[in-house]
Length: 236
Image 1 (cartoon, helix red, strand yellow):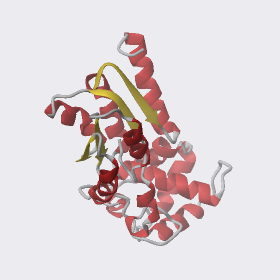
Image 2 (tube, helix red, strand yellow; image 1 turned 90 degrees about the horizontal axis):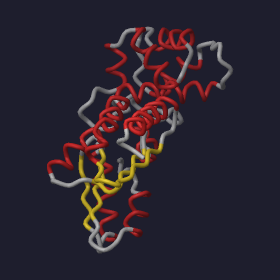
Image 3 (cartoon, one colour; image 1 turned 180 degrees about the vertical axis):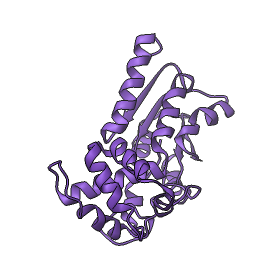
Image 4 (cartoon, rainbow, N blue to C red; image 1 turned 60 degrees about the horizontal axis):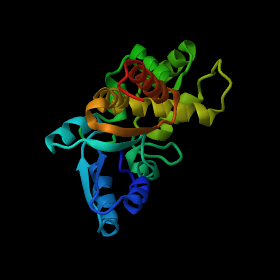
């Protein structure tokens, strides 16, 4: 969770024993198809299955197959291929539409901003990148001035124009703002919470889970869930 470009899965394929089963989840059907095709020749000794689904659905998908996992690896956040393609709208380094969808079912980032309030955008900035209450509101006000930005560079210009009380570079503030918007657009925290809640049912007895987090919003949720599971005796 998630398959992405397949770096972790390639290493797992090489290390897994004969006839092991590897299920790779990704909500991005475009990249899932490319990566699973690339990995197929490497997986002759194991059973490899690429599953087009949000990792919030892992528990349901395993239950449907009547299996539990001996190990689960969750590599959170977006994939390098999504960032590399300016048409996906994940980067401000090159101009592109303000999209940011990991899958195609969600609303784009531009559509999210058109219907969001200053309060909602400010909350996303605090939760997704730890901006202060003051800075998050100032950025939200700047972003939501008409006309609402529809490209990544226009959004970046709005964020750069805000004078922050926090000491950080313009590029850093833009990266964090775009991270927050991406998380909100894709409901990433809700998906992570669902995966963590279903983890005891996903894992077989003695099973192990590894979560790779990239910012405090993800990290807090994982640590809180693990500490709760250890205190209750579910985890060791």
